[in-house]
Length: 278
Image (cartoon, rainbow, N blue to C red; front, side):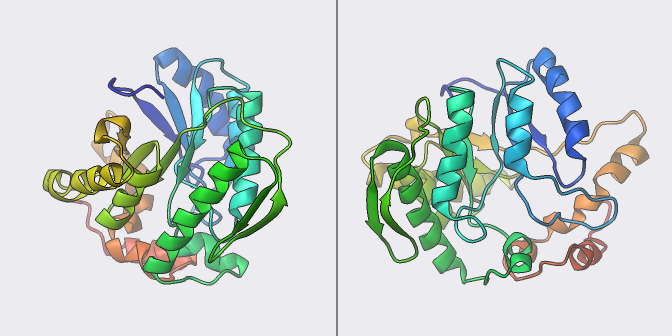
């Protein structure tokens, strides 16, 4: 994606809407002038009542076929536990080979609700950051090198080779709301993605961390594409607009991202602690 221009994308919320409905919106999004669609990549949703749970990578392939301009990617994939990073590399190389220049890959340290239900452990944050950094290295090696041997702390490749390669460079975005992973984004990623926070947190914490990481890699922060997810619910009836987003209430609780809470019914119950004023 080009830097320096304001671009507007949409989030395809696989937790809230069935994949077929989201597909029906893709041509409308293109006609409306949006630039990209970011598809959430979760095994479990953030709530239980009336939830959905489509598989992001399958949806992206189908959605990209319905348009010739929009770019597509995940917002975001955890490439470290339920997915092996080599499989992530293969999947997105395949997507880019079919839809050249229109695929990006969003990555993050993950949430317990997507990993624990399928038998994965939920390691400490420091470990998950290390795993993410190593996974990015694995993905990039497979995209650019032949018959890769790699022995890391968490992942191993033995003469691994992708026979279907990306058509070109696939941008990697790293998502973070704190300085540790923001710095990693500056060091290793093409872009940085974050969520709505206090302006001072961007100015005093996140952007300086991205800059530090970029400088460690001999880059300028101007080379990093900066993105923020903005939550919008529109309806002429205020109460209707509020009802449509109340299912996301638990995501406003910071501890939901830190602890191994993985049952959507339990997550939804915590959401009742959040008042409508938030």
